[in-house]
Length: 440
Image (cartoon, rainbow, N blue to C red; front, side):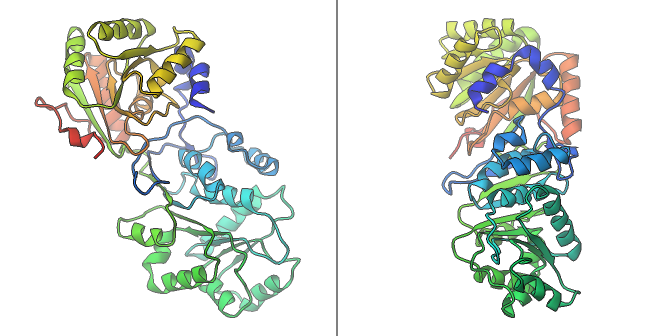
């Protein structure tokens, strides 16, 4: 869905109901989880992060009908955040490095991506998936079975140590049973390659699940490297893990070409990477003066100012323009045509300040926004996450400042800190260093 369509579809009234169901993630087994997402990728010169909050369905990924049917059978409706960011890129063949706690749907990312890409050729293996234990290998094989139930031509096999290697060799020898997708532990897979039971010249996708476990252990890493060398130079590489230390990340990237990097933190924590968050305690009547000060004092590319009603949006926008600030207002009180026109003006950098209601709090991707101000604090933690996630997207740093002017606001701030196990500090009296929120 385009951002323009988002603007058409959402109204402030609709958001009162949709806010109750934010786009958090279904895990590979369909359970809803909340995750904070850091994404870097695609451009080595522009590494950065953002929190991606969109409400989308699996249909938006343009998957094969057979896959969509299986997904529906499994009862899944909405992809998790990690799936929303990963799958569209992965389907195009982008290398992926992803850290996400178990339960946030990373297995489904590579299972669905590889099933979407696979073109079965008898006797050829095009997808290799490796993991560090037999149990996990078996579990992944079952995921493939679930999602490929309407793809009878696609064959998947699982190979691991502790079973007679001859049985695996028999499966690989026979063109009718030779798998297009192999899930295996590195030791057994390397033995099959070394003994020439398996040739990997047709491998197009190379996946490591729980990659840190395999790359940490010298023996396993050696097996992985040997298998990697037996595959073609041109292939897609995807690596996933629940934990990915700073030391292991460069090792992973040696196997890849300019990967999309995705890091999902503990789902209870609010750690918006690259985003500095503050609050300012003040009376309602002091808000305009303080806002004026901030807009004069802070160096921003573009700023979005959130208010709680269309009336307040209109009034504040008028006030800002009277003070010669290049402002624009976007809310549901404006016609759809005018809303899109104003959105485009802001996106194209003709205006640097946007006053908005929560209609602008979801699904809007404008890379120059590096300051979000909650002139009116939202009513709950989820809306806060949607709002402040507008700043610091697509490789930019960002800062968010929330005005706290009532006891109700203080309660919301407490609930935000409690829910995400994060402290939002008070805005310093002497301001903040621009290097903390302006890109270098």
